[in-house]
Length: 103
Image 1 (cartoon, rainbow, N blue to C red):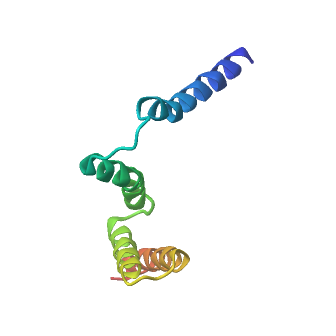
Image 2 (image 1 turned 90 degrees about the vertical axis):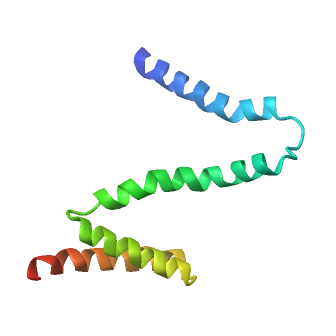
């Protein structure tokens, strides 16, 4: 029980520090354009770094992953809603996985 409480406390302190430290160090508005752009794109870069490997390990084979990814990128590029992109990419990946043994 103590081990669980200690783990929760460590996680809480870590999460708090991650959120509190930027407010402590950056009290003034950041005026440097490079730093502003860097901070703007960090969430997109982290999300991509977490998502892209998961896409290619989600299916049994690489061709179905590539087909789903290409479908998602094309639909997102033309401006389809997120739910349409996700469902279409999943359907294409699934159908590709089913049809691969037939080819």
